[in-house]
Length: 262
Image (cartoon, rainbow, N blue to C red; front, top):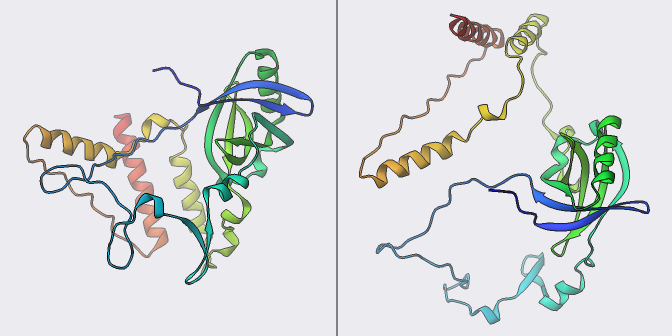
């Protein structure tokens, strides 16, 4: 099925504007379950009071922000509308930064941008970003929500990825400091050897959601009247000796490569 655009706008760089269509670059493939009662009828969720469980009519439900325990600020729909960003169709690029300056944890959701008429300037921008190895920092409004993102080139096209705010990203400096002794030179050499043995090109087709496949296989077999039994996934035994663990890993990798060669 052909991709369908979910939004239209234009990239604005200074006074230049390039019309584009926005497409989702990823899709949700999670297994979703329905909630049924004992008679296999669908069950709906209702808003109920925390104390007593009495159902609350939709007209009485309000949105509120808790300032401190028991103290709330009520926000009406009119309040929320007044603070919504002004509608816009512009993806405003403010600067171009080196691609390696944005840490991976800042990237959130990717979208494809396709040309919407002005193909010449669109592909010229994509080629310029690829050759200069830079990404554009952009701001835009979509569906009443303001976004910041990174505009980059990939395979000759443009990708726009939303970025998390700085206060949403946890710095690695806040992680616990490593304890114990530092790895020995022998352990570092063995680790590098293990990495070199597994060096390969990334192929996304090699990586699948095995849990999802197992669930769907189980459901399909059960729907046909079978009583399926799935093998348990065994956890690997932990080891305390780093060099011993690396030695076993290297031996295992070599063994698999020898079998493939044979």
